[in-house]
Image (cartoon, rainbow, N blue to C red; front, side, top):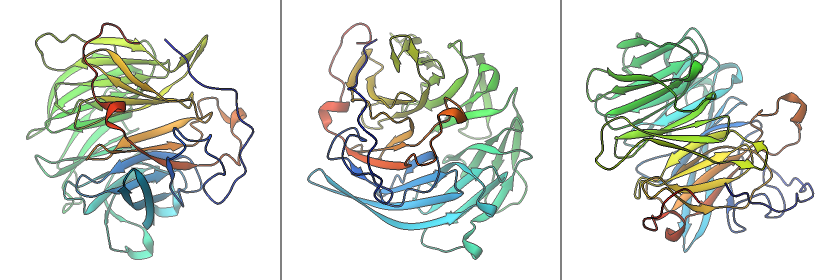
Length: 364
């Protein structure tokens, strides 16, 4: 495993929500998104139909920007914001395939729905479902037009936005830590290192339940764009590539990442590039890596930004990459500096950074 980075730069001066200088981003030209929120950034999502970027935040906000790219130059314009009831932390969001509706979940134990372009009463999105504990993850199932939510109450619940009661619910072995979907595949990572896969082509059917291939707690999971499997990341600087269906010539494997000597960091988020099937990992070490699972190669390792990176996402077209830097609590309250900026950046993705390079053996 290689390590990157330079000596820690002096703390930048705060200017609004974007800091002065460019040592806090992957590349000097990366655009700093204005009004990124007042607390930790828990998720980022792009619309599949337009360059609308969404974020959820521990300050209770769900925010939307319109992002424009021209000749590699990027601008993000704040469009709208709603807040969960009582400004309860929002932990995840997703969008309907037409890009018009946002679904969000969090510590208020509610599944909420927001029509973009509309201001809901009291600026709180409409509640369409609930759990008995905070809700960690939400996804839209396009084959059945259902919304699925996974909570700390060890339940998956499936919602039709027009009905107050869940259409179905599934008991899980443990709390949901993360989940993802790709067409007919849904993968759920739970506490206790349980991983469950489902076929969600129609009525949800359990495909397989297994123990994570990684020895430590699961932090994130992402479904392959071709629906054949998933990547799971752990708190111990490792990623497992798992096939849910047999693919000729492909075997499941795991690799180390986000490590520096004896220091081991959490893999906070994994996101796939829909065009190439390559993916990113972001970590508590402030590093973003781009990977090619099929050729077992690291495509790009960016210099460390010296701040934990909590989440990231490629846009549908694949030419923009949003990432959030805010404290991830991986070192507890002792390392929390109240003035740490919570920032979102958008990187213009060069084709050569993310495109598969061809066959090589072993991760480099």
